[in-house]
Amino acid sequence: MPKENPIFPIVIENSPIDFILIGLKEDDLCVLVKNDKLTIDFIGEYIARYENREKPEPNTWWNYLLKLFHVLSSAKVYCIKSYAIENLLNKNDERSINYIFCWRGRCRKKDIYSVKEVLNLQIQSIQLSLINNDKEKLIWHLAPIIYKCTQIENTNFLYNIF
Figure 1 (cartoon, rainbow, N blue to C red):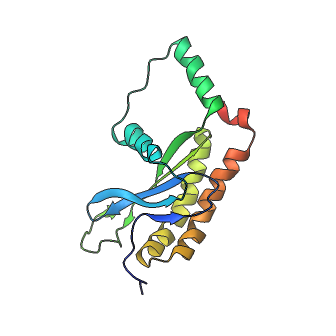
Figure 2: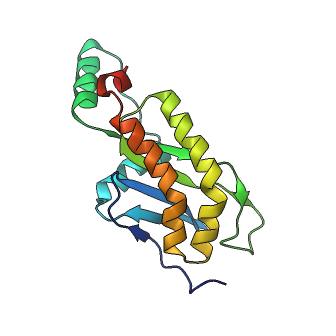
């Protein structure tokens, strides 16, 4: 039995990484869960890079050096989509939905797939926690995903760049 209607976004305190979980609220994409220190530019980067399909700059040696400097000096936003599941947040909608998990960090392509595997293992439990407005269980089910992202971030920094 749900505690009460959830108020989004649900804020998670003391996360070692910046992250958001995006999903449908009624018919619109919105941030369902976020960490407490997240700034709005993080959400803006998601929108620019993944929704608006920001055009990449041409590959020149100068852009390559700038990109390398950027990778060495800062983390970027990565987003992964869960597999499609039944939309239990809106029972009037028979379509399946995907959740999108975004985090700021440094990782390789194969690391992104390993985070996606963990997300897919947890996504149904996460959705039930959202429906029941159960923040403690939500934290429990997000923890393996956050841990995986942190584990990737803490591995050899230069190894992750290349």
